[in-house]
Image 1 (cartoon, rainbow, N blue to C red):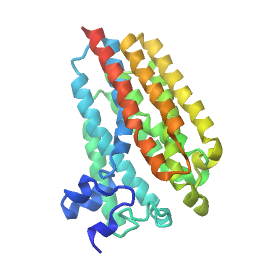
Image 2: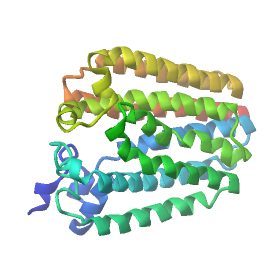
Image 3: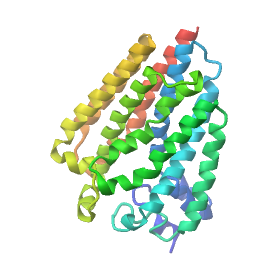
Image 4: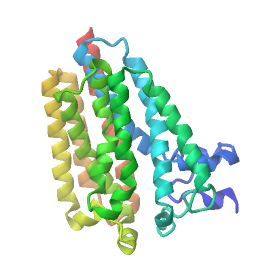
Length: 310
């Protein structure tokens, strides 16, 4: 079978398919380097918390290092998480049109090979984590329990997006853990706001597979909300903005951060207005735009940290 015949269905035309050595492509696809949007979305709460903590401490000395380490860690651990997800979901993925071309159901990578690749990625994540203090290391390791159980949630609850939110938002706790050796109210509010954001954007993503999921009995908030998805997004995105605003109040941020939050909120409103749940291609585009939403908020926090440290 040619390499082009086993490209992942929704990831054509990317650098993995065109530039990476042929032998490496199944593994890069397994880690989703052909679709890095998930790594960016995992990274955003990490960067938010790092910039917020730097602003609170009025010290930018370590912020560049934190930004770089979080970048490496997010891509490594998202790859490990996706590898674990594909191992556990290999039989389900074979039944869904969009996922049957993933490396394991497509026969490109065996389960033992995938497990070895998972360990290698996890070791990179551990190497990043060991650069921080003991409390931050313990906080990071604690997230692994959520990551481990997430793939099974779609089988037993209509709210797997909530568990994904718990995992993908964990970085919102890390800034405080790394900078101050504790998790304070600011970090918890940022974490809660990020969870609501994840529930919203992953509901959009899940609408791509709603019909196939119904056929094979997979649960999701996309199926739960159905025609009420726009209303649900209004609620969860509003909660996200309100909770992050609460974090900003406790952190005593200045105007730059508030401008970033305002841009973030406007972008979320645009998503709701633009979304058509009957159009899978549009759902994917709107979902991917959340990286831009996250970067707008990060830019505001970065500017605020720089101004407070000056």
